[in-house]
Length: 296
Ligand code: PMP
Image 1 (cartoon, rainbow, N blue to C red):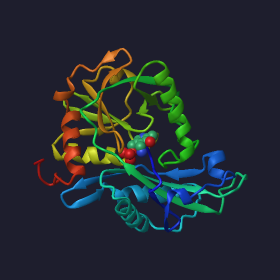
Image 2 (image 1 turned 90 degrees about the horizontal axis):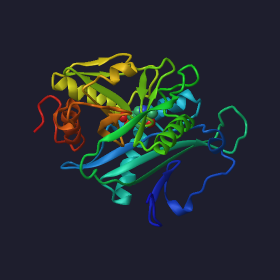
Image 3 (image 1 turned 135 degrees about the vertical axis):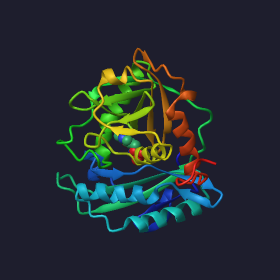
């Protein structure tokens, strides 16, 4: 699914056939989760392939490396240009892109001096139809911001996401929603959350979440429509009296939430602000939307 024998990947400044690449089993990243990554999408547009918010994603990769004292040699612009070449070499247009920065063989608990950067991509078609999610509040909390840099995209953080998804699926739900250490709404395992109430949107403040690039884009799209977006602490009871809710993320884009445990959001998705922003976002990523104008 992710690659075949012809797939080209980027590794430390070179383009290679994936079958020529290997990873050291003594890599500190494998043992301790000391690695950082990104999830990016490229879309076919009338002007050619567009790596959506590519600079923002690679800037966040560099930021995440700095937080872990991983000495990345490449700049975000170099990595973005390399990614355009990677897509061209693989002839990908609509693709998911996964950069990963990982360390060398090192069993110590200080970040290894050996830093490797790997970028791969695979084809990713548009979602067919719209899906709405049945979500449950996870018994797992998001990591305390005093335990790590929660705004960095650190591989080790994703154990928390995996535990939450496993647990939610075991109970028959599509997705989990995690609270922060104070019991306020934080985010999904791989997406931010927005709530609609009386024509306004609410989303958790930065601080206890990974502040998504899609979250920032959706806030901009909402403001462009004159929709008020309020960043605040959101309690579970506020969420369970809301009109509608949705997740945002690079992979998920904008996806509506049908139910939260036993609560069904009363506003039909087709009537919600989330649906309008879903439509705007779909146009924006394909360069069919000018933020200074209305959707075409
Ligand atoms: N929160 C978490 C925990 C995530 O993993 C992601 C996906 N990167 C997001 C939010 C959404 O971030 P973005 O919109 O930048 O993809």
